[in-house]
Image 1 (tube, rainbow, N blue to C red):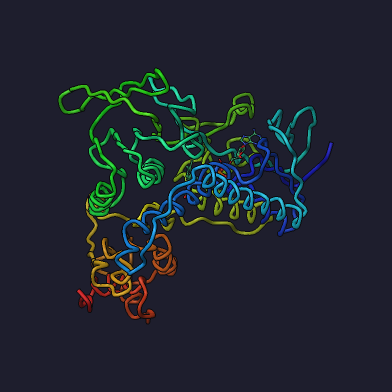
Image 2 (tube, protein in one colour):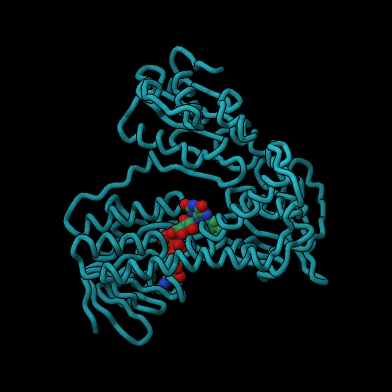
Length: 462
Ligand code: FAD
């Protein structure tokens, strides 16, 4: 029996980042991971493989759409699917091996196997029991299922199966127009698959800025994705290697069926806490299997903490990482804090979509006075030069104080541009502060500055 200061269950972005910080702060740390590789959903079957496929297919799209316009002539590349899968796997392996290296470097013990908590202060892995002053549940999430649509990971797949299909399907239905559905839907649309996205709500990307949502849908539709909105999927059946999906329009109940090669169920994710023994321990849970925690990541059982996808909040890798760091600081007797008001969200389609902070819709609902500064990428020289002038930056500031409350971007490198707004918000900056900051020309980030200017006396290039 080994004794540790901290045992973390789960080596996803929440768990592995927390472990590194715990070790850096002098705590004797172990991580339990049941997968063969470290990195969790994110590195193995989430953020990283999806971004590799998005990158490869984005380049293909660029060749077809824009190369000739720039005078780059010649034969178009064709797709070698197994080679593209190999490239994706190499990217995954490089990253997961990188975490193993970091574990060794920081002297973190990897307890290989599935863990459970037989009693506070103890973690069981296989037949071995290990002791720890603090136990952290960082077991993440798994794809949520949809009644009547059973994933076999061949014809009807979750995001995990969609990342490793045996071939490029000719036709696909994506159930759910959230981030994962749109990212993977656009990967296959760029590879030539006829993609139909079926969404229960009346709009894609529920909860995002309404103007961004409209523009995203228009651009993705032009890239070949079809959208069926306000439709409740009734079920899917598999026959002869194809699936027939049936949905009913919410407005009149009219049913439609479509037979396709592949169905991707992308209706969200749910916490994965099975087999930990939380019920027997009396750990208080919230609906949908979410672990209840307080402001210091403490569960209802002393000495047991939880972070990441299995606790309330956005299911994002960087949210899990920040919670991991904050908790490590707390366990080491320091102050740990996550500012949940400044967590960016990014969709890695082309163009990218990024947002942080408040939306106009939520401010209206609250009755808070705000102002909006908007700037189109059409007025940005760099974006025009690379045929990415669609989209805009929308800055939202408090009407009275000018303090930045949120920002929503659809356009080139939106996922990187959003971070200057995040920093500004962390420092409580006003739109004018950002507008007065010199931005290099010609960069996409000038559009962010122009949107901040538009909150005041006006943008220059609009
Ligand atoms: P996880 O990453 O789920 O890791 C939990 C780990 O715990 C797993 O490895 C699991 O094997 C292990 N585990 C569970 N139970 C036990 C046990 N009892 N014993 C031992 N080990 C156990 N987020 C972003 O921010 N950006 C993106 O671009 C993005 N893209 C995504 C794309 C896809 C296709 C998917 C599916 C997700 C994506 N996400 C993205 C979400 C992101 O992957 C998650 O938010 C993140 O991985 C959550 O981290 P976590 O540490 O909480 O849990």
